[in-house]
Length: 305
Image 1 (tube, rainbow, N blue to C red):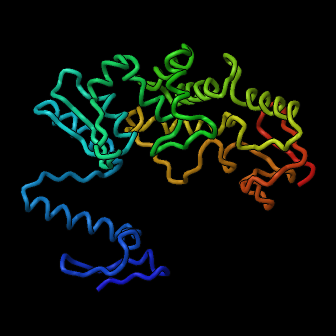
Image 2 (cartoon, rainbow, N blue to C red; image 1 turned 180 degrees about the vertical axis):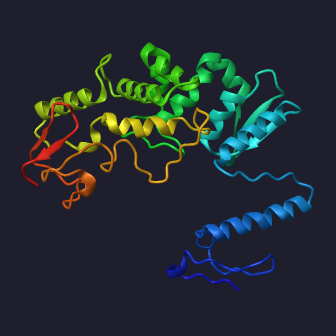
Image 3 (spheres, rainbow, N blue to C red; image 1 turned 90 degrees about the vertical axis):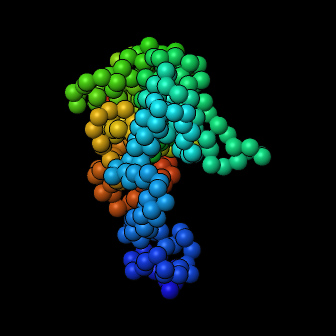
């Protein structure tokens, strides 16, 4: 018998197929070992019932999408899922000449399940948009990249359609590129999303946006509403270049810190030390009564808290 109290949510349990579990599923699966052992046992049962089972080593969406595309080459295929990342991968990688390929939600809307026709999306978007869609999806935030504050999913899609400069940066990610080219393209693309001028750069754009906010409002400037710094953009840029997003290499995001996070956005507090080391805890977004920014956009100083 396995019974996990609220104080033992992360305990590793010894169990087999006949062990009764009295705790909630969420509590039991909190521990990674419990989850993996359960998946292994479930896989064995499915294989015993002549079901083909695949286990993903890394991101599961990539394996699911590749398996679905391969299946559609031989017969009509339907993928059951609710993940937007999976939908984007299917639209990007499916063969337009294959058998029908659908993605069906596992949740009902009203009395029916929602179904997406992958080939219809491909015809509607066109070949170019389909090839650049993962970039537009990932740069605004997905399973492996941080979400940008104040930038919704529709913004990159509109930029991809209407902004030639943004589309140019997206093409950098769709081909072979050096690390420096990835950094430059990522920063330029982010500048486009935040309304930057051509060749303005994120640091200058950040400083300009800060000055605009100070000059048009008496309210304290909220640091997280400013565009990210160039240094932060580099971290975001390399995370875009992964299999579940665009590129060939896996760049995991284990910290959950995005480009607008105070831990890596180049902020400096009134003591003159990086925000991540500041004892005043700038990361808690304390209200600043007076703020000053360096002209290169990389620092914020306050005179009063």
